[in-house]
Image 1 (cartoon, rainbow, N blue to C red):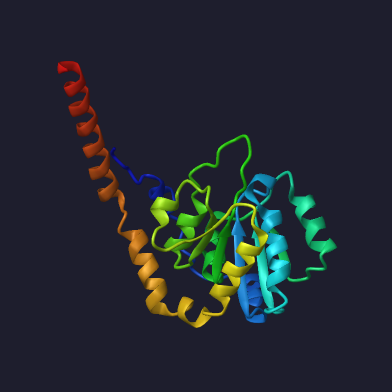
Image 2: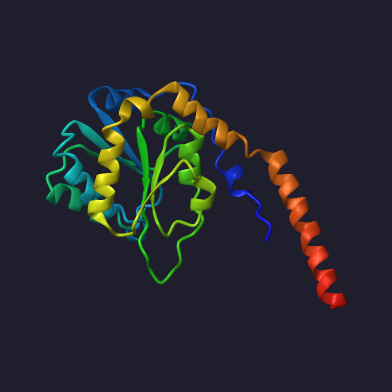
Length: 220
């Protein structure tokens, strides 16, 4: 088995030169910022996240949940947040490429908790982007890229609202450690260790290994 980490190359973003004022204001008024960034579709478990946040706010009433992106189920999620009386859920809409890293930079943790459907979960890029930005991700146990995220990932059962809420609370109770430059630098260093040169070496090894195995089968 040969592994090529080419998805890490897709997690490279435009550098955040200056955090936009609207993001700065969100950061300033929030004790903690929880982020989801991606397509707004039910498969991504965003309703699970919103319901978990409803439990989290009881302990952290000044926390903010940012839901960035757009999709066909956006209105459904907005109505859900409204029905729960969640005023600290912010829907940012489409994200500009030159602002994506800025959004990660104001976040304390990133959530990506898809649920099982007839279509298998893909190998998502956003959790990789989060680590590259120094933000620890919480993901559900069906996320394909979990091997790439270890050891800097927290895993919860898919569709489990209580487990997600508890995982978020655990992070929020240790925010000082998560916000420390040392911890963030550790995550970024880990992400940057998988660079184009590393991916190229992995690719060449995979090709050579495939040729070798084919030769062995041919001679068997």
